[in-house]
Length: 453
Ligand code: TYD
Ligand code: MG
Image (tube, rainbow, N blue to C red; front, side):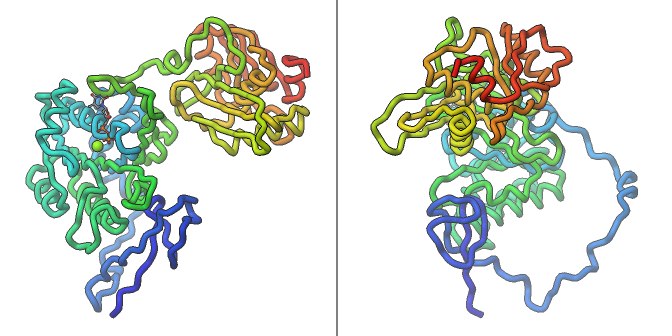
């Protein structure tokens, strides 16, 4: 039988019937590759219903309760995992090459080993001597972690069978290679097969497995999204180049909240936990500058204050620049359109640059108002009142909608010495931390009041 071929996107794993330059599932360019299909099962065998057996949900209570979660002691990591590592769970940690995944997971392996888990760290990328050198640099020289440098899946499974660890870390899934699949390591079929084998083996044997996956921009190797559906928890490790701050963000978690973040700082001796991130993401605030606004945000279960900075400058170009770092470009375009259509403030002929300070990425719609005020403040060259935080969502009509967890935001701001807040009307403010509130029902009203437009 001739093998039929299919085409798969290496960034998101979507299947296509023919090749094209751009994946219409995820929008990435040059990520679609030809993949040989997985070999069919043994001929003549069909999937029988014999082994699958129904069970009432209530019966599950009689099955032995699973052992409790293990906390590593790295508070930022434990929080993102939903309160520690669940036994026999599969975790994927994705991130750009060089962001610090290996560093994080070596530290995690040592921390879990100290917490009593038998841990194995399998590297397909570095030699044992290199890992040892790194461990020494991180001050983990004598941690009770077993190291293996191996890429053959069969050998790894044999090792795990003999070692019977509680935790295995695979760095990285793209270097693993299963001899049952005849395509190159890093291809979609290899990455899928290796992830499937490893997670299935781990679940069966009560081992927790952490897979490292490199995010790739080009379609050379398959990205971690291809295996997101196979694991219980998906974490992304992110940060801007040139900033030492790293954020571990949960995007899927079967055992905890999915929007939690952990904040770390890359130092000369590995990743240090950052307990009070708000102080970190605020730059020096002695005298208020035009274009800067402090946003009181919420990341997961924690309030997090950060600073939006805007620059608006005239340009002779007919297509002015719209550039953002740490904020969605489409959302910026929407806010510019609302300012123009609802408040009569045009940005044509003006370049607009918008940054979130410190390399943070903000996704909350509650930051809309902070963005709008940063833009206005930059455009009018007028600084906002000192010690003031801002939050609220902007609708297309120009109305302001209250954000969630108003009280937590205000409390955090008060804790950090802020004295006033600009918020939408009807924001729930039982205990507002003693901040002076200025409330507005729509953007036009706010603009008229604060910028005299
Ligand atoms: P690494 O963990 O190898 O990244 P990844 O596994 O995601 O590819 O980290 C690489 C970067 O981290 C490298 O540029 C050096 C830096 N680093 C430090 O700044 N301090 C340290 O203690 C370590 C181990 C690495
Ligand atoms: Mg690495």
